[in-house]
Image (cartoon, rainbow, N blue to C red; front, side, top):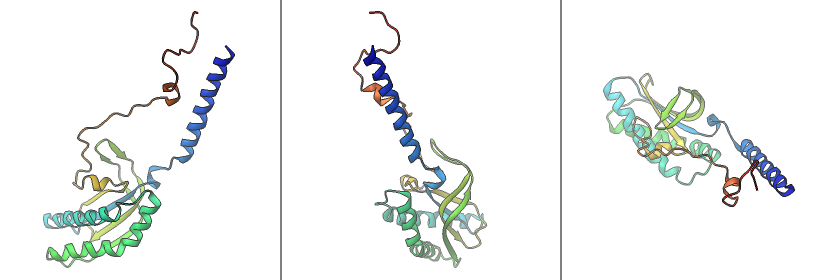
Length: 189
């Protein structure tokens, strides 16, 4: 009987310590993702098409640059270092399409509305983002998540397509390790 009690106390202690360690590692979502935000010159169809062309090329460029990124700090540093190149890529697209709009880029904290990407929901709040403003920046905007690389999975305007969503299954790993047939509580012998 004493072994059972000690075993239960051990499992509870390990569970508590594991939960505590995980809780200390959690970082608020706003501080762990890097977003990309592209603002069109206007809502005119040609400006919206230009915005999408700029977005496509910037995402393609960033996909190559972010292929080795492992954490948010690396992502933010890489984005900061690549800002001139991001502006160059965006400006080239604007010129290739026959426009002379100025392109501005910035890395900073910007307010975003709630956005869903398939089954993932990013709540409204301030997020670190690479922002590209084409011309006046008065048109509809487009955004995605550069890190973790959700833009890279799908760069469509609708966000990520989760064609086969999987439900999360929560289990107690310590209980899975117990031999089958072990029961807790009162039982008759």
